[in-house]
Length: 113
Length: 114
Image (cartoon, rainbow over all chains, first blue to last red; front, side, top):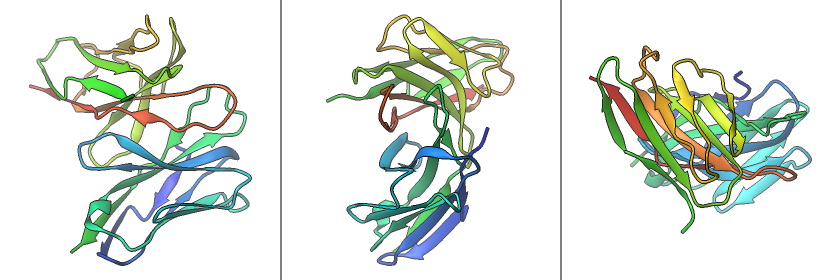
């Protein structure tokens, strides 16, 4: 029941550069969420954007949502070595009676020193 | 501090053995979830529970069982019927009802068959 799909699967950039990851999904949603997972650890909730919102910021994170294209992007500005992790989008489908969100397969981000 | 605690961090299972993974939360969250993650892969839902004494199968429930006798606890048993149990297991919880809520995750249990 995969809903979100991240692109690219893997991304390597130099420290200080901006990193952009994309997420596409298939059905209408209530909200879309981004999570970070450091190697061997649990996921950490980064940001949630509702279907009636177009852009949201949190520190160095910027998330956009385009419901007409069924896509979202996560921008990390001025990347740091500590940003090296996997990033997952998760969607809360509309008409979701059981409040269960659906995760994509993730983008592996590697920040080069 | 509120959070979710998973134990143990590492677990080794012999062939044919049942093992139980613990998940406890003190966030007063209604819903709890178990996910399986294989190397380089996303999360696949095993079981979830929205209320005490009730739970539903996820996408890959075969070979697993759960219970929800207390709001704070949602243990997962990996039975001998699960033929390929080596994986990273993640427990999560969330609020329910009106509003938009994210999930809080535990730090995971890595299960290896020996």
